[in-house]
Image 1 (cartoon, one colour):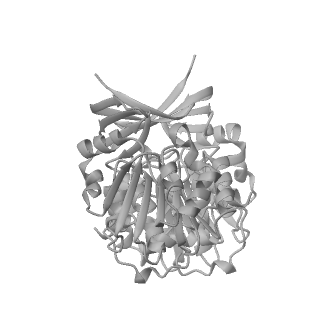
Image 2 (cartoon, rainbow over the protein chains, first blue to last red):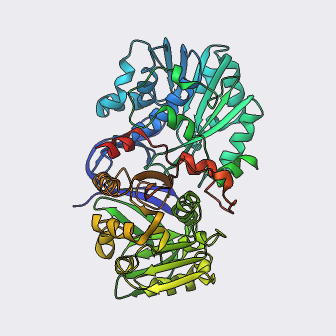
Image 3 (cartoon, each protein chain N blue to C red):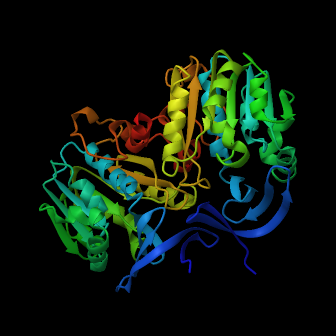
Length: 276
Length: 276
C-alpha cells in the first residue's frame, strides 16, 4: 500500500508527500496533531492538516525568525516567544548567550509534549535552564505584561482558527506595551504570493504603531509558495543599521550576517505590496 | 468531477493543482506537451509531466535568468538562448536595448508553437525583429559557433532526458569557445535542497574552466522546493562588481538592481555545498 499525505494549501493547490509511517494522531482541545515520517522531508509535524515543520527544512524558518530580531537588538536579555510549542524557535533563541530569560507562551501543551517525544532535535532548546514554559493564551500574556520584554517573537500558525487574533492590529498595540522602550518584535506573516492582502494590511497596521517597520523573506519549501515573509515592528533598533560584526557568531545552517541584510532586499512586486 | 494534476517532483513528493480546463495535449518527437488551466497559478505548461512555467510565477524565473547576466556584461550585443522555447527568457532579453541580436536554439519547435498559441504574454518577445529562431540542437549550435556571443543563457529542462548533456562539463567547455573574450554564460542549476550533488559538481566544473564563477538564487514557487539556483561562468565581467547605476532601467516585477546583488548572498548550507 502507498500512503500519501496531501496538504491543500488553498482550495485548489497543495503539496503531497509519500508517508513511510504515521507515528502519532490526536485531537487536543485546540487542534488535530499528526506526526508523519516522509521520505523527502523526514519527520513532519502537521496541525489541523497543515505542515508546521519538517526535520529537513525547519532550520530555515526557526533560524530566520529568531536571529534577525535578536541580532538587531543591542542587548536582548528578556525574550517572549508566542506559539512555537515545537521548540524550534526557542532552540535558536538560547544560542544567544546574552539572553537571560525566554518565556514560551504556547496555548496547546500537547504540541510541546508531542514535539518532545517525536522531534527531539527541534525540542532540545526547551530544556535550557533559561526557558520558562507558560501554557496559556499568548494574547492574554501580552496584555498582562507591560514594559517587560526586549524582543517578542510571534511564531503563530495560519491566520485562521486559534491564531487569527495574532494578526490583529490590537495585538500589535498590546505588543508595543509589552516591549521595553528599545524593544522590537517579529511575526511570521505568510507568503507574499498567496497572501497579498494580509501582508499589505499587517504592514500598514504595524507601521502605524512602530517607528521602524521592516519585512524580510526566507525560503521555506514546505510552506505555501516557499517564499515566506516576516515583519518586524521596532521602537528603535533597525535591522538594516545594526553592526553585525559586534554580535556573537552563531552556529547556523541558513542565517549569516550577510544574509541578515540581504533578506530585506525585496522583489519589486513585494515592495509594491508594501507601498499600497 | 474534480480534475487534479500532480507533478511528482521526486518519487515521493509532489505538488498538486486543481485543473479547470485541459487545453492541449500532444506528443512531439521529443516530449509530451500539456497545457492546463489551474486556479492558483493560472495557465501551466507541462513537459513530460514537469511544470515548465505558469502564468502566475513565470516572471521570477525569466527575469532572473535574463537580467542578471545581461546587466553584468558591459555591452551585450549578441545573445544566445538555449532551450526556452516558450519565449519567456527571450521576452526579458529583448527589454535590453543594447541587444542587437538574440538567437533562440530550441530543439522542439512544438514548444514554440504551443507557447505562441496558449501563452501569448510569455511568447510575445519571439516577435521582436532582433530574434532569430533556430530550431535544432543547442549543443550542436554551440559547437558550430566560436567566439560568437557576449552572453549565453542555458534555459534547460531538468538534467534527465534530452537536456542531460546541458549539465555536462564538455558543454561548459564548448560554451567557453562560443563566447567572445569578455563573454559570460548562465545556466539554471536546479534546487540546492534537492539537487545537492548536481550543484556541487556543476560548480566545480564551471569553476575549473571560467575565471569567475557565481551562484545566485530566486523564489520559483512551482519548481521543486521553490528555491532555485542559477550558476554563472564568466571570462571576465563579475556580477558582483558591476555598476548597476550605469545600466538601463527595466520594467520588471521581480528583478531590481538591489536584488541583483542580494540574490548572490547565499544561505550557509548553500555556501558549504560550493566549498565541498
